[in-house]
Image (cartoon, one colour):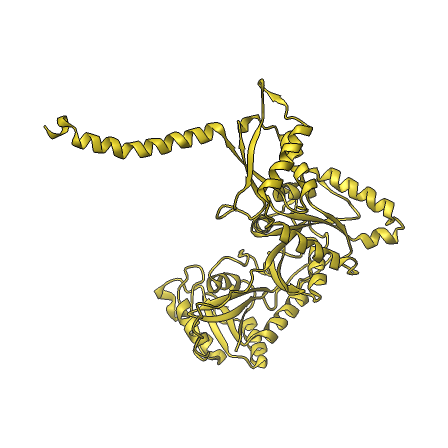
Length: 479
């Protein structure tokens, strides 16, 4: 049986902090403000061999001035419908509140096993603060502290007590393919969440005309034609001067982290405004992360309604986007509408192509022939009287901890002689010869001086044991 655990409770009792503790990693945004979590956050985990799905939810009964209370309540209902077990989080310091009792009545109607986690019991002196919650009549009350990771083992044991024994792992079991992680990024209110909902064909993320609706990076699993994907819906990134408080800064940090952990970034641009300065800054983060990317011009249906969506206009818009985002010249540009679903399948095809290009393997012979012809066609400029030369090129495996993209090791006379303009020229020549759409190319330089130093070091290391041996056997050493 597959187990799904939903974490619920009123606002600001520490649900997201407990979610992170039970998941074993920081997934949900934790901030000391009621209503921080709005969307459902879902992750898979394992306790002592038991596999399960864990769901974090927004606060029940949140008083949201921006009108998200009903949407959050709907997300909680969906989580409860999918759950096999429920962890009801309460605040042990504040004690039992009327809203806790309201939540308890809702949970009784779900007919699921409910375990009460009395959070914020940070020390032994507070261990009895959970007593009044036993009046709720659920299976048990477990004093925990998500901040200090106290009492979690007892809670886990209680939740899994009725589960079947976990199956022993088969050493020959084939692990499922890791899904391609897709971070959907952009400014606030450009249609990122609408795009996710259209892609997965269900209202998975809360959508609203209010800028900043999405506050956390929401992971959403999806399979298309047998290929597993993980969409990461992110908060819109505002300009620094327009951030109102530390919560928005934390939201921006989560989005930047999503860019770094994604396999492919989808930069969403609003067709009605074009590429703005903030779009360029977000694109700069993608470039700095060496992330594969595609640019989506959303709300193209609005341009059609205005009678301005002709092929010639689309071409002009495409060229303008390429000009504004010249440093992401490798990124394909797609025009679509998340609202109507127009060209959505083309987006998924492009993402699949970029995912394959990430692991492209060059053949050494053709690679060196392309580079040689490129340098014969246009020689590198003189730098301090010397000219850059590539002696040999070969593909290098991505180092552990770095993003997997096509990486070329170039054996050169001196890396200092390579100008940025000539590096862009080589990049373009390689793209014309090999299909690498959507992927940056990483160059790793290996100059003659570097090789000479390494050779000297290896000779010194080889000679040192011989010198020590001679020293021990010399006549002077015997005396």
